[in-house]
Each structure stands twice: as structure tokens, then as C-alpha cells.
Image (cartoon, rainbow over all chains, first blue to last red; front, side, top):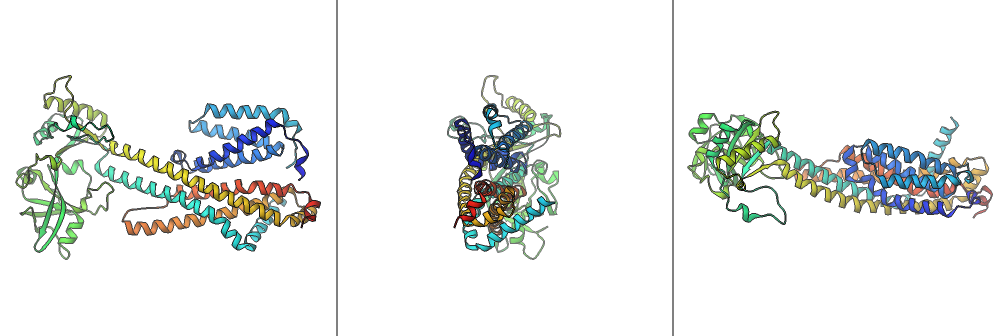
Length: 114
Length: 414
């Protein structure tokens, strides 16, 4: 494996593990009846966001910069969507912001390649 | 341009891999097929039942208030002992409402009883006989296919005329028009003056197809219209622009004054509206939807693990091919896309089969149950979304692992 060169800090590992658990539990949320009631395309949008978050955690696990970039982009898109449907979760925002702040000190050490 | 040609090549490679291992592909997509089938089938049934129920509730009238003895709220703490001694709505109260209620567009008194309807040697049992006052056609939604509704004189003078449902008309008069014919209701002759337009099955029951409607003033000679078992009630429809809450507020005042209730005395009547029924069913459908969502969700998740497993095997099997591709200059994203497309195709095919089975079952169920069950657009979108999502999520890790391989080590692997 090419990506094994950079050692992953414990904090990033913890974030990734928490993220993977979150993905497993938020996956069934894609077909939550409440989301379906908002419109035909909302489950699809939410699904794309879940998939993007998952991929960003994989990138982060392998200490790739694109992982952080994808995480930040998916965070902003998700929050914009939640603002539009008036369903912003304060706890979710706090956790995501905490994750982003925790990733930033390690950003320069991360690999720029895919 | 190079990107698109590489993308096209990735798709071709992925398809070749799937076709090359047919049995393995079929077995691995089976998990997704079952998962998608479970989720979408539950959602389709719930959506269809909800749609049918709303249609039935709407036929009762969204802007109609029912003055009755018993309220439509149910539950474990239903205080029936408070309601049992209440007086029944009376015909004279209808006149009071009609004269004094400013928010009412129309109102009708009605009772219903089961009866046997006869025509010559044919007879039909358990027909619902609706006995209603003149404005019934203005508070209840129905259409008359043939003939006409009662005139005001026929209604007030209690003439023996009736309107029958489509099912009754076809059963009693198979080869002739029922209009002008005389049927026997409770041993008394009633002239058919109209036939209701076919309504179809109603989830709440009470479809006009199996009803016979007669003027309440005529029904007095056949039944006791003040019998509690016949559920006497007054139906009041709101004027356009008057909402149900305003109408209920006005009716509460009028009924209290008509029944001479003191200011602190509790009401001895119930003002029901259709939203009470739909609200209770809403919570039931929410529970069923959530149950289906949890069961189906986790079965899809298990299907996803199956695909992830098969993708790991696929990567392992093709490690030296990956090495050759990389040593010939294949980019990491090309290898990534190749495996990602394979897993997405797998789960998309699985999802498509699952949706197709649901579609076939809806056709079969619709024919046999006589109820409209349809696979909605939102459920089709949901099915494909979940398939693509599970393909990406379960295929990304093996695909990414393949893309990160060292070409030399990959070629060496046996």
C-alpha cells in the first residue's frame, strides 16, 4: 500500500471510528419517512451526503488531504440543506465543527495525492 | 477528454468482471435485492393504504362537522361512562341548526340501518339503508350516474322513493334500467329514482355502492329514527371561507343553548370532524413506516456487507491485473473507478430486480385485493438512491485499497 507512509494520530483515528459508527446509524435515515415527506429528492440528497461523509472518513483514515476537504464541503452542503428544511441540529453542528478544528493541525502532514 | 475515455474504459472493465463471474454476481446482488424489496414493499403498502384512507376520509368531507353522541377519540382512557347517558341528536335540532348557524352552508340529519332489499325474486341482504333529510346531497360527496336526487317535497313529505348504489343496481336489475322500478325495503315498496355512480371499495367502509338512500321522513314509518343503534347524527358543512374550528365554536354555542346547558355544565354532545380519524391513522402509519424503515434498513446494510465482501475477493483475485494496469500507466483514480463502478452496478442491478418484484406484486395485489396499490415515483427514486448509495459505500474501501497498491508488489502476487 502506498498510503501507509504517514502515521495516523490517535485523534484522527478516534474521529474516523466515531464517523464510521455515525455513518452506520445514519444510513437507515436515508429512507426515514420524515425525510420522504419533505420531497421526492430529499432522500437522494441525504444519501449523497452520507456517502460523501463516508468517503471523507476513508480519506482521513489514510491521512489524505482530500479527506479533510471532502469532509468540510459535505459539512457545509449538509448544513445548508438542513437550514433550508429548518432541521438544524445544534449537537450535530458542534460535533462537526469540533471534528474540523481537530483535523486542521494535522492537515499539513497529510498526503496531497489520491 | 482523456478522463471520459478512462471512465468509459472503467465501466467496460467493471461490466466484463460482472459478466465473467455470473454466479458470484447474482449471489452477491441477492442481498441488495431482498433489502430493496423489503423496504420499498413496506413503503408502497403504507403509502397506498394511506392514500386510500385519505380518499375515504375525504369522501366523508373535510369541511363537515358531525354532531353525535359519541366522540371519535379512542384510546385506553376513553371515558365511556361520561358519554353513555348523553341524549341522541334529534331531528328538531337539525332545524335549529339550519335556522341559526351562520357558518353552515348546509346540514342534514341521518340514521343508518341494515336491511334486506328485494326486487321480485332477487334479494340482497345486509344493505346499508341511509335515511337522510333533504340537504344530504350537499353535505356528503357522491355523484348520481342515472336518474336524480329527491326533490324537497319528496323529502319533507316522506315519499317512498330511493336512490340505490351501483352494486345493488347491477345485482337487482341486470338487464334493465332500475329507474322507475319498485324495490322492497323492510317490506315496504320504494320507487327507485336514481343510481349512485360507482365509488369502489372504501377502506373505512360505507361505500355508496351498496347503499340505498331514502328520505328520513319516509324511514320514520319503517324504523325508529331515535334508536341509538342506528347512530342518529347531524352533518353540518361549513360555508366557503369558514374553517372547521369556527364552525365547531358556533355549533357548540348553538347546541348548548338548544339543550339548555348551564355555563359550567359539560357538553352532552360530540362535534366530530374527519381530521380526528386521519390524525389517529397518521400515527399508526408513522409506526408502520418506522418499523419497515428499521427492518429494511438493516437488511440493506447486511446486503451492503455482502457486496463489500465480494469486492474484496474481486480485488484480491485481480491484484496482478491491477499491477499490470498500473505499471502500464493506469492512474489511481482509474483503478478506483473500475472497482467502484463494479460495486455500484452490482447493487443497482440488485435494486432494479427488487423494485421490479415490488412492481409485479403491486399489479397482482391490486387485481386480487380490489384496492389501488401502486409503486410511486418517490419510492422508485428511493430504491435507486439506496442501491447507488450502498454500492458506493460498500465498494469504496476495496476500490480505494486496489487503487493504492504498489504495482511491483501487485504483479508479484499470485
